[in-house]
Length: 332
Image (cartoon, rainbow, N blue to C red; front, top):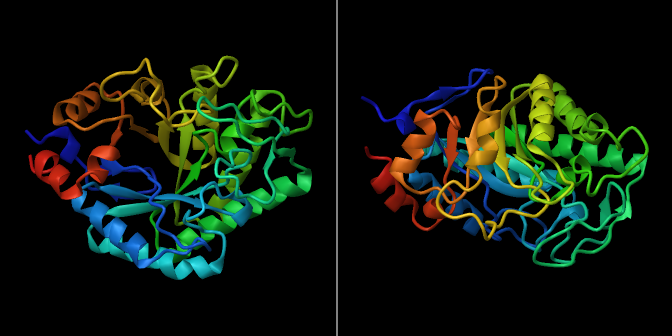
């Protein structure tokens, strides 16, 4: 009997992933100061492809220079990025894997202090467990339109570069997460207040991307919850997921929220975020990815067999040694 991790998965659009293992987006800090891919970036993804994963996601790439959160962050903000992005996509396709580009704006989470214009939905400092972030200015309607244009333009570049998917980063306390969360979005206009309004900027971005780049599969990295008192709940994200899928999203990559991506101190063992993904699995037509310190064959097979998730993201265990992971996990 074929192990579940080796079974293909076909999305609603018809795109087929050859197995259930995903390399999640992980920052490599190998781009140059202008956000352009370097030979080190290409080599990094060639290395990750040796894992045998069916889907390799490319790290969070800013849609605007003002939306960077690290100095050597990969960019998708300008047509100058296209050459490098195309090389990454080609490199991964040559290794027989599907690939997606994650796009993001840091909003008020400028942890490196490099943005010339730190902005957010309400001018509220983003809460973080391990640092004090700058206080952003509240965004205007023109800022909102610019953000949407930047996300759509970056998705079009992902399409032109040959990526199979584009992932909008809505988690880890970054820009779109700030819009979704009642902790950071306390606007009084159509983009604030009730959940439907707080999700509006994201749903509009997804809709516009589907119109502008219909070939491209759209996925979202969402928080299963915020992890802060008064923040997004599981029920909130179940509703947001319904709206996202109705707008055209085919994969929900479920991670953490406003507090960031670090493992909470009270969480032990593998799959510390799977319990946030499981309530969303099977509730829409979208495939659901679970993540969180996953590394063993037994755990991967268990969460697939019990239908807690459809796809399993393995980050650090693959980053530590892609070919070793392929030998240990992907060869039966």
